[in-house]
Structures are given as C-alpha cells and as structure tokens.
Length: 441
Image (cartoon, rainbow, N blue to C red; front, side, top):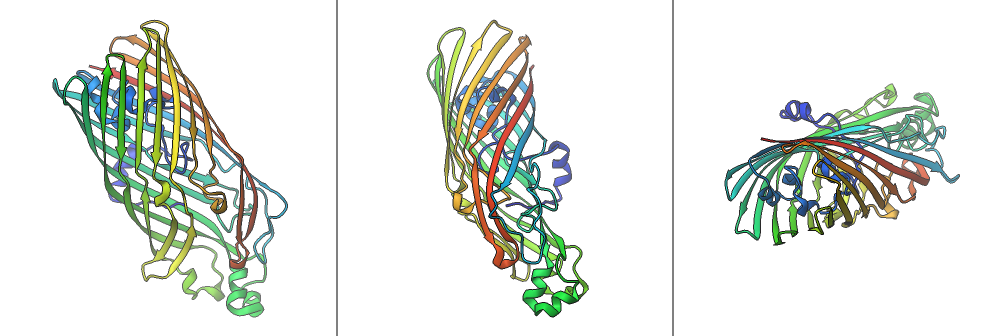
C-alpha cells in the first residue's frame, strides 16, 4: 500500500532518518521506539518510564526523570517474506509466469533520539525524534506477482515536543504535539500486451510487438501533517503504577507523480499511460495503551500492556491523477487491532539487569483482502535483553526479539485486468536487534 516524499522539510528529516523497513508491529507500525523496551517486548510501555523514551510511550512518564537526560537508540530489523505458489497462480494474460519473488524483506536501521529536562519540581519538557511507521517489501522484478507489486516502501519521521506536569504525588499528566513527515514509493510491472489487446485487439498488440511486452510503473508522493498525544501516570504506591496513553490519528494527502517506462510507441498517446501528478489520501491510525508496572522486590519487576490501534481507518488505497481520473484503487478493509504483552526485569546488582518479554500482536489485514504489498498476519513476540550501567549517570541497553508470524494465504484475483491471479501462501518472520545509550547530566 505505499508511496514516496519530496517535502521541502525532508532533506533535514533525512539526516535523522537513516532507514526504515518492513513494519515489525502489525500493519506498517513500528513499535521500536526505545532500545530499553525491546527486551520486555515493550510490555508496560506507558508505565515503565525508565528513560526519556517515555516521551513516545507516555509523556507523563517524564515525571520520573530528574535533571536532564538524552537517549539515542538504533534498531536493526530484518523481516523475512517468502511467497509459495501453490500451483493455482497464473501469470497475467500474454506474459510468462515468473518465479516466487525471493525474500521480499531486507535489513533496515530505525533510529530514535530523545531529550528531557526539568523546568521546576513539577514540570518537565522533552523532545522525541522517532520513526512511528515504516514498510518495505521488494520482490524480484520477474516474479509471478510483479503486475500486482514489486516494491512497496513507506518512510516517516516524527518530531514530538512534549511536556509533563505533576498534579500531586500520585498523578502526573503529559501531552505532546506530533509533526510527522511521510514519504513513500510504489512500483509494479505493467502488462502492455494485455492493455494493447484490450484497447485495440490483436492488431494493436501486434503493433507493439506481440506478447511479453511490459514495463514498470512508479508512484511517488509525500506530505507532512500534525497530530498529538497525551497520557497519565498514576502511582498507586511506591512500587506500583498505571500508565494511560493516547496517540491521535494523522491525516495526509500525499502529492506526487506516476511514471511509466518502456511505453510502446503505438501506445504513447494513451492517457492511462501518461506520466503526471497524483494524490493519495491516507490516515495513520490512532492508538490507546494501558500499562502496568510493579516492583515485586529489589530484584524483580513485572509489567504488562494492552494497546488498541485504530487500523479501521485504512479501508481503501485510492490513487488519482490531478485531473480526477483514477490510477489505482485497492480495497483494503483493515480492522482495528489489539496488542497484549507481558515482561519482567531481573536486577543482578546495581550495574547489571536482565529483561524478558512476550507479546501477541493482531494483524489488521483480513484474509480476504491480503495483498502482496502487505502480506501481514498475527504475530507472537519472544524477546530478551539487558542493561549495563557503568556509572550512575550512564546506561547501555540491548535487546533481541524474534517475531513468529502466522502463515497466511493469498488469493488476489486480478486476471480480468491483465495482472494475473496471485494464489499461494506466505511464510514470514522478523528479527530485531536494538541498542541504546542513555546519559543523564
């Protein structure tokens, strides 16, 4: 489902966004917003408030920080995406079939940075720079589903100034603004042979060279928009706290271009194959989290989280030219989802701690509307990590997670439009490695 961006602010954002890759949370969300949280599978994200990364998960958590703190984190994400043709897949009309597409996943580096400081004993301010959404699938150019998808890529960067205020010793509130850039790219093969036959029969198809005439369409677009987030942290007692957090929906209208390569001379005047400007309206979903954290004793902490995401906003991918004619419409019909997680910390001593966590993450993609661009399904997280504190004002966090993704089927029937019927199954998984440096001063 994707697009590409050229906003005037993007060069600055690009210096901060090194890369983004296939989403590791459901849909195309990226929950990897701290290195300290990965080892717990991000359980207790809105309540733990271990460091300044709480700006993303719950800005009210800044109430637990003192003085000034800076956080820098990086996440290496490797999705594996393998399609299997079950024998029912057919190539598009007048084209050779093609292979299975190879591994459509690739390595990506996702960075985060945060800074928080105390203004007075009750008030703290902070800034987060993160990548809340990202997706990339990239199949071999000659695969059997190339007329439906080859490359799908989306990149975002989010600037999130925030503030927290202590109402009293029990309750803290926080809020922030989100200025989010989005950039994307979508490519697929174009079946010129089928298009020529549909427009002028065998005579036009012969004029362009007969069967096996194809090219590539590329759609790019970008936009920037505002959102907001807020939260509360409730200290039930010195060892137990509850966090509540909400992030708003963000609405975009991506503006960009569509282009076609290798267009046959006999079809050069076709308005459907003309290069030009396009628009894509799309919304990033809102989300709500409730988290708990409990310190059992000096060694053990336990945390849990439930997060709802409003993926129901993504009902249709509709790309139109500036003159109003449609380039492509795909019915997605995504559903709202829940993510549940639980985790624990074990403190060996003041310098070393270990972490573990599990999570169940629902996918928004219905079986009846799965596409090659986002062949998503439910996933189970298993995560391990730890922390080393060389001094009282420094910490190094590290974590690893493997995501087991439920095998999914696809039956995307588009032979009537010359794109072929893509019928088969997907075996997917994701591996994540995170590191983080935290400095208080």
